[in-house]
Image (cartoon, rainbow, N blue to C red; front, side):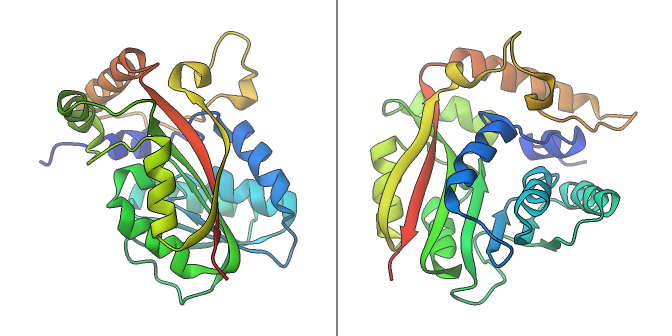
Length: 245
């Protein structure tokens, strides 16, 4: 039996809105993009479909949701069926997006790119955006350059190859063909953690089965330990990048 991964943990427990700031942050940053019923939106790495469902219900946008993990896709599919939402749901890899060039007005990515070959994924987001289209990408960001030992410790749980700083992320986005790059929200991991005052509707969703591989609890514990240990060394940023015309 293969060793479970951090993404298996997220999928098994059906965690929606696991990224810093959760759905509340998503609502805030998307609200400024002027989405309409005519907007073509890609939710790349859609997970359980929480964000895609929100976009359809709030804006009536034409949303395509894509994920690679079969269990995530199944939970997203059940959500869309339960809520009667017309979301196009596909299994796919952000390194090779199954869409023609210039397909989308907005590509939304939430804590996905950090787990990929970053330059390849950013290039794909750029390729499928229309000229002048917008990428909103919420990603783990190092508050300062991390040492080899720190990166190894993070990789042992998240299988991340690297954790860029804000400046490094901006440079990679520009190199992928984005003409304008800005940071619209951000902070340290510590600043984004839920507390006793966080409204229940803004906490991450959970949809766990009755039977769970006990090794997934070890991943959960390791994740919580790293979150505490790196709470001020790691942060998050929402990068807004506009594809060159």
